[in-house]
Length: 402
Image (cartoon, rainbow, N blue to C red; front, top):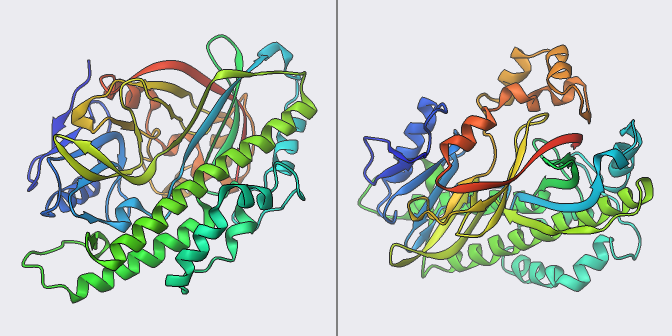
């Protein structure tokens, strides 16, 4: 059974589930920086996919009392996963899945540009905005903070984005077909995150704290301040936008599949979970603001998704409710190198070989997402066996990348 180990040299304890997986020196120092802040509650929990990030490491769980660190939440606010099980079996898929991939790409705009709106249908962004109340909530935020651009709201709802965001068809251990996707609050959430990170830095420069903040990207808002409440309102909006974005994309993907594949039903298992977000939770006797930066909630019985890299296995998991991890688990495999380093180190032939058997992009534009740029997902899962149990193991057969 796995368990945590302590990272020494920190003001507050750091409990890390990193047995058998690498921890870069820069990430360890970043964890110590966060642990030095006086409003950390109990300890910091570190997931096995941990790696260096902006201000705080990706793959860390940060409980705070009376304060929130916007850069710890990050700019991909509400980024997360969604997966649904279908009644389809592997033998019902066509020999060539290229047409299926192209139809998904037609239905769900990819990349970092604007998306399309499929007129006034149940899968249109305009319909989703009317029925969700997201537009009205954003108007209230923009009224107080007009420097936040809201023009991307309609244009990017229902779009995938770029980087490590993806849509996949997968097969489980019984050759049942699953649909899985990964995305968040897109450009609007990014703008909100960047705006409030800068406002927090401005506030930090004005404060007389009596203690040092080791990194300006650890600037924070304190409860009782107007900007604290404004940030909470905005970040919760972005998280809801991200969840709605995933649902809208899933709806569109299922329409694409129904047009290309035999008739099917959806199974009982469906998961829609964040892994970059903040919310109020109770841990070790206190209500705190819990930031999961690259981590999934894993209370006892919670279903979650831990994807591997492009061409690797992914997992549907059930939480064990481990209190030391603040009921959390990893959000994926975790990078072992930067995108620039991956492009320097690996060739297109390396990527083609690593993604053999998967219908996906095989061009130089996705080399930074090649499996070799990530940690071994099996080692990551072994390191957190006391946090989650594996319900299903999935292997990709189609991968759509931004």
